[in-house]
Amino acid sequence: MSTDSFAFPAYLTAGEEASAGGQRRYMNTVRLRLIFLVLAAVGGAVSVTAEGNDPFAWLALVAFVACVGCEFFLFAEAPEKLWYEGRAAAESTKTLAWRYAVGGAPFPLGAPDPDGTFLGQIDEVASQLDRVVATSAGSGAQIPESLRSLRESDFATRRSAFETGRVADQVAWYTAKAVDCARKQKLFLLLTIVVEMLGIIGAVLRVTGTFDFDALGILAAVVSGLASWAQTRQYGALSTSYSIAARELTSIRDAIPKQTETQWPTFVGEAEEAISREHTLWLASRGLLLRRR
Image 1 (spheres, one colour):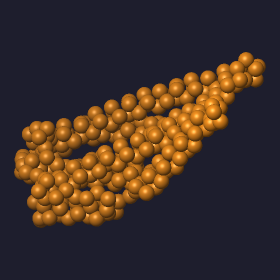
Image 2 (cartoon, helix red, strand yellow; image 1 turned 180 degrees about the horizontal axis):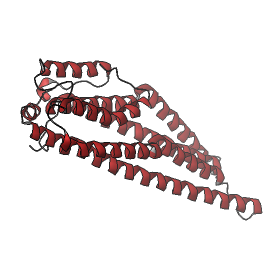
Image 3 (cartoon, helix red, strand yellow; image 1 turned 135 degrees about the vertical axis):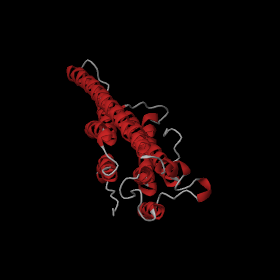
Image 4 (cartoon, helix red, strand yellow; image 1 turned 120 degrees about the vertical axis):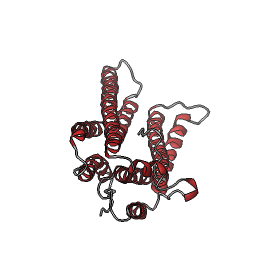
């Protein structure tokens, strides 16, 4: 059975949309704040008086006011919280959906009222994430027919679907993200070194009196901005955690064909715990943890 046409619970869609929106607003605001800080440094370094006014002083003033506006927006709207809660909602719902669909713990085949247990656990997740509103029933089902159909399939079909649609998909995702984060970390390190070298050249020219333009403050602001952005994105830490997750899930994927139907519920539960581990650590690093049954 192909998993390409899977329809996941409506709450997962709500979480993904909330997370994407929160992340976009947060990152755009942080990016603007860093740009305004560099502009403020430019305004402070350059002085051109025209008809009694210094336009660069006005540039610095406007840039600092804009920085304060960005700070107020981040404080008042807290888009990063929506980002984190949205991801928590999506990932928690996805792991519950896969456990239910392939007959993994705590929804093994033959369990009493698996639908009620599944919906109850989604409601418990939703109750902890007050900024992520569950999608209405008219916008999608919490238990789509595709999940029920897979749950009613034979063991070989469920095992194959879990291997390709869940574990292998996660291995590919983590591997690609680890490579991308490592590449971006190197890029930002290179850019930082280039700007710092320009700062050294500028300082030497100032010391020797060859060049009297005060660009050092601007370059320092650029270096600070690059470092702040790299820290916000956490490229190095994410590259390492994604690589570890990919290796662990590769071992799990290799073990799937050896599982018997009796072992299957427990194995799926343990596999989903491994998949969720990186998400849990990511959330914990940002001060968000969900209560778990």
